[in-house]
Image (cartoon, rainbow, N blue to C red; front, top):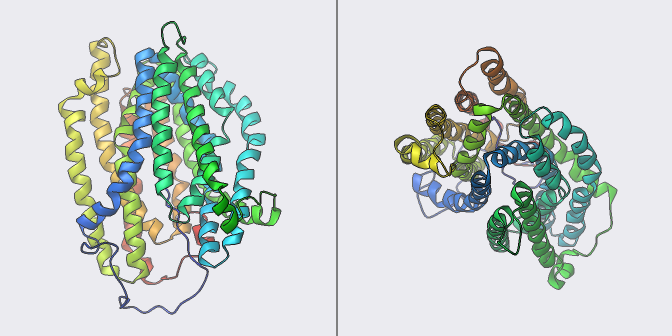
Length: 482
């Protein structure tokens, strides 16, 4: 899909005179040469490792379900994509608390931080008034008439009952990240993900004589419990005496003005996410109705991409950090050096991923099947591995272009481009599935095409180097849709 993996950063609303020369006070972010491959790796690898934790948790969750039954895997994947449509828009708004934490902290008003964060806590809780009733309406429309109706409904409705936990976790995480206190987030995340994997196994398969196997309900229950405990841990530290004294985190009253300030900035972010997600969810609906090998290809492919998307996500975040610094210091000539470094990284990782996806696809696929699938099914899945490998490269190519557009704060163009995501993803998928009867593996070819098109568009836009003409500092309004 087009827009993926936002980065949240902040600055004060001010205007400065900009020269066309590199800032004499410019210093690189690391001890390595600016925009070099080594600098990119130094900044991206910690992010990649952090994102790997979440990807590995999701992979284990689906792998356990595949071992339990293929229907459970297919139900969780289809329902999971629909869950994201209800989770991420609210989460995108909730990340605004990070912006205000930074603004108040940098502006010497730390006493305002606590109550500003509480406004997004209230948003998380109040969001259930919308998401829960809406989910009751959407679920029958989405799952009725499909072969996975029962499994998908179970998974979806269980997670919808605790949907508020996801924006709540985002809000509490933003409080600590906005102050640069990432250690507690890292430890709490590892704890929650490790707990989720353990609970997944025991809840899905059960413990003989102690706990009956719960299958797909157990997977959803494990996710809800681990997410809830993650919030409890962060909330405990959020309300510590030091936090209450310095940041007044005990000021929990609802403040409409502060609430609206954050909401109106976050809503455009939520809108862009909804546009993208509805396109993908609509594709999921097409494939779920089709069933058979189409559904299996989407489910297994959607699980396998968890093994590599975190790499490009981390690359994108690292690039935004470096590119933003280069633009801010007017060191423009180094930006294309950064692109070259990113392309080298992408080519090397793509070559390495050829081992599981191109050289040993049968071994990779064997984890999903207690018994070997039919020769025809295996043939389709092996072709899917080829397109997944291509998708990895185009997805990374997209991330490189997107990072420059994001760093340049080219909000209007980004919003404009997003509206075309239906033309590059949903309509090709609809024609391939319902008109031309392309084979099931063509789904990932279409997704690769979608990512490549947007990558090209973003790089063409970046080649205009509008950051040379519009070199303005970041303000809150510019953050709204990045």
